[in-house]
Image (cartoon, rainbow, N blue to C red; front, side):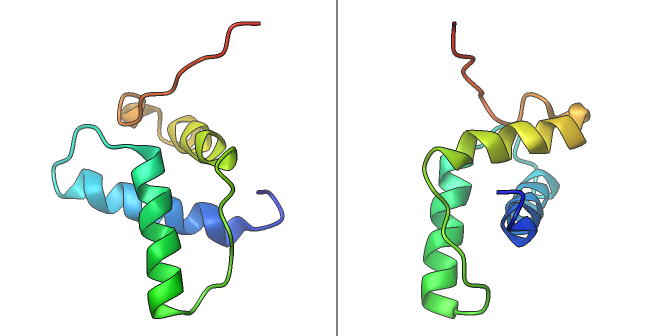
Length: 79
């Protein structure tokens, strides 16, 4: 994901837009699916989002915006 910063930028843009619309919680997978569909239909940025990367995007978002730490439900794996 670090090699495609535009993926995170788009993920962040959509998450912040949802927060701005008053959403308190949302699914990271829902945002990823929206981005997949949007880029397929509208064109523009060309990127793929692997399913395993969705949690990474959510963690990166809440790390950057700790005030929205509860926006995504992030399941922690037990080792």
